[in-house]
Image 1 (tube, helix red, strand yellow):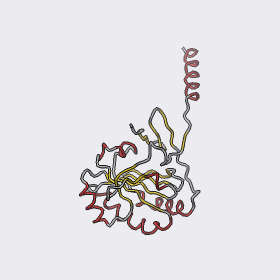
Image 2 (tube, one colour):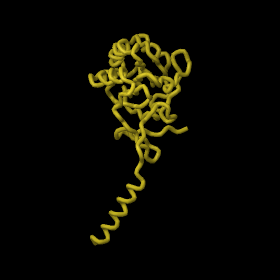
Image 3 (cartoon, helix red, strand yellow):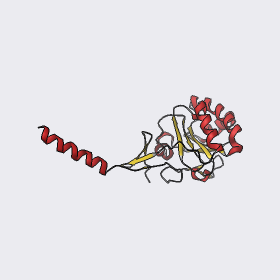
Image 4 (cartoon, helix red, strand yellow):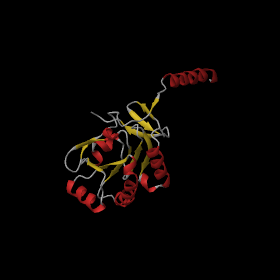
Length: 198
C-alpha cells in the first residue's frame, strides 16, 4: 500500500512545481485593473492616468456610514499630501447620482470622484473584488499596488499614513506586494481578485 502511495505523492509534487505560477506586481496600467469612470461633470477619468503620483483608490458610497466617517480623515490627509504628488481616486458605488453629489458637497470632498452606478454588480466592484465598504488600495508612483485595506479605510491607520508619506517622498519605495494569477483569478497577498469579464 505504502509503495503505491509514494509514487503518487511524487507525481503530485512534480505536477505542482511544473505548473507553478510566477508572481507579477499588480499595476494600474494592466487593463484588468484599470478603471475609466465618469466624474462629477460626466468626463471619463482613468485610474491609469494617475501613474506618477501616489494614489489612494477608495471605494465608498453615500449610504455607507463608515465611508462617510472615513471621508473626514481623507479630507485632512489629502490637504496634507496633495502638493507632494498624492491623489485620491474615489469610486462611488451609488446608484443615484444625486445622492453621490450631495455626499461630495456635504463631506467637502475636493479630490477626484468617479461613480460606477451599478453598485455591487458594477464592473469596478467586480474587477477589484469589492464586497465591503470602505475598501482602499494604496498605489505607488510606478502604478504598483502597495497596500490593500478592506472594511477599514487606509487613511484611518497610522501605518497607512506612514506608508503614504514614505511613498510620496521616495518614488522608489516599495513594499513588494505581489499578485499571482491562477486560473483567471488574481491573488493579492492571499486575497482573490476576480478577473474582469470583457
